[in-house]
Length: 107
Image 1: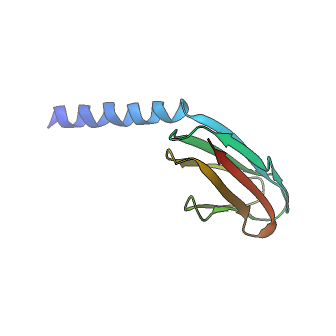
Image 2 (image 1 turned 30 degrees about the vertical axis):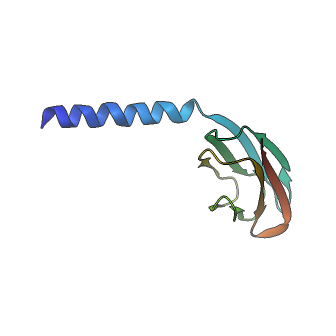
């Protein structure tokens, strides 16, 4: 039993350490504006988007083709991890401010 616990702790620590090594992009949402509006990522590479709501109203990062969404209260920071995806363009937007749009270009 002790070996199982040790193995679980080691594998959990390995997974947590690997998350810090991910290619990372920062996306700021600010009351109807998204910065940057274009992100370029390598094909078939796992990466992390740090999402920051700089605005005074709620924001929701959403990408239908990537099947990701995250609601953020004002001043909140969170993240989503994108598994390695195929080449293409993946639209994202702030669901509370649909005019605030961007694209992740994977090539």
